Length: 259
Image (tube, rainbow, N blue to C red; front, side, top):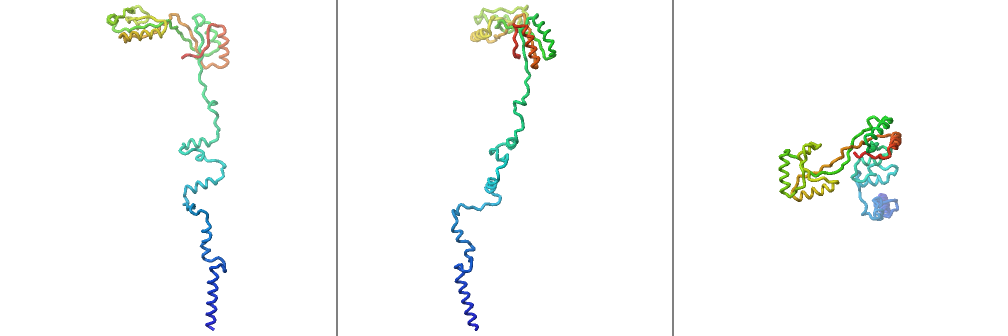
């Protein structure tokens, strides 16, 4: 009896051992380790295990996110200023620069009036009530240019310069007298009067080549000056009224202020 039981147990064990490797009793231990699935992988050498804080994993997660509203950092190039990126992402609520630019003060200049015409123009201009926005100044036309040697040490200095000029072979000069209207030029030495500044500069160049290095140029102006009016920050209405007043003075012109 014991022999029969032992024989039966051995027979059952052999059947189990025979059937397990062949899958007769479901998935075997070898299949649980998935050798067939591992053998069926495509390019397993391309797979890599990434840590949880991997930048590559984070970039893949961002790429899969819905593109509803791009962030400021994604819209800005690498290395860009964070403040500039924030401004780029912000909605364009500010008006164009042309709409907020400050108004530049304007200055209008009128005429070269004689004394009599300036008085009449000023009387008509008073009706505009411009107050301190109106300025009147005297201008004088440049009539010629004088080449001269500035005075130094009075008459004695002038005599020394005369001797030096003669030594250099320059005889066309005269000493500016003490009665000259401009006291800063008295006892100076005039070397010539020229109609244009270019001609005066050319002569100074000749003097330098002959050894005279102290010559200067001064503009000579007419004795009778002209009156000029400068008007600032005129409104469109005041500018229209100015044009009407100026029409009574056809010889005068309206222009932008020169200075």
